[in-house]
Length: 263
Length: 277
Image 1 (spheres, rainbow over the protein chains, first blue to last red):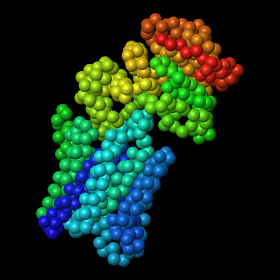
Image 2: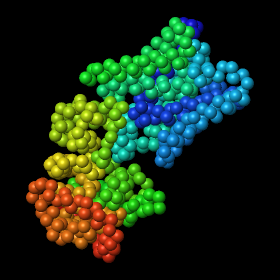
Image 3: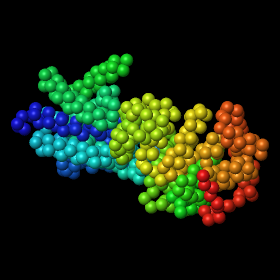
Image 4: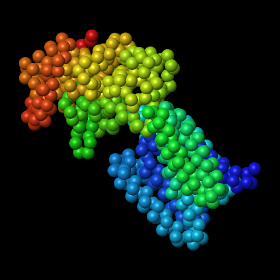
């Protein structure tokens, strides 16, 4: 069954959605959208470093994403103006990555695979990496769910309950780096943040509790992956952007539905 | 025996000492109010007692295993986060249905569990925050300006609720406020803060203290009238006009001198008689 490239692609999309649903909800609640951008754009730099140092791509992106997420997290804790800082870091990381990767001759031709993903070329090894990473993120967030929610609602409240908001922030930082490494193959560096934000944002209007929103975000992520793959197959469109297109359409439909059901 | 004790603590932001050399302790069942003008370091002090802010000097001692119920000054849940009142009460510890319903009923909001947090009025939100704090089975409640944004009847109602809760659960209460009205009558002990402790004692003692009058810019007449007025539980809002004046006086450099000299240093835990209800 796994020999069929379409099945592998679908499974990769589902695996990714499992992680991006809950993590994306936190990204939306904590207004970390740009944070996701900076970290995922840094993945291109990771690809360049991995190719230059003959490391596995996954390891290179994970390392650079961790470094970027850690940097952003530290700067945020020091009270930097995050809007500007993240703007600099997100685009700086992307530009550095693109320049660095131009020095690696064999990549020049298929750079778009790293920018927009190459889900139709997912191997069994890639699939194991995607699912391993996704389940790790899911386990991490599931384990810290209550403390994470408390710290997201109000950090002082978490503190007073004996929790450490810094530790919870670190959990999200780690999870984000893993998701970036995992998602690179599926939707590419430019669209990872979209997979985090759009399904969660679409789920917002339909949910009455944080758990419902995270669950719905997973469902919408899965639906987007399958619909995007279908579109790609039917119209021969690039798969990664097709998945994000599907997610955006679902978001629009959910927004309209949410408004109508409230009226 | 004290639940929570600060020993000569100081906090700095940048080069500025926001809280300097503050010692205080809260005994079980006591209602203590920290009173001070805006910018006097009250909230900073409270957050230091919670262990949120690092001290630059001194130490905070908590009774072992102390259960704290904290009601923050503001809680703005991001509109992107769906959260019912019921779900909120289960943060960070999950509580049973009956327990949650009882807590909501206790704060006067029975049946509000399915309401979204973002749809609550200011007064309802304060009560929900209190309900959540009560579900922690606190030995001490820490309240940061709990009645900010409430009208006077709402304020009076909230303090009555606090007094009842103290009666029922025996929890101590340490709250921070910048308004003088109902707070005075509801407290066993008042601590006036302007970066350091200016004066402290029973509401009656404090309202007659020259340091207190200097801090809030009140004549003898005004302070006494205010206190007695509040004691009678009549709230016609007639003293609202004095608010701005008080603020102005608190920034008057002269008053610093006034309480430098008048500083009584009578607030060591040992040489103080604590009034109890």
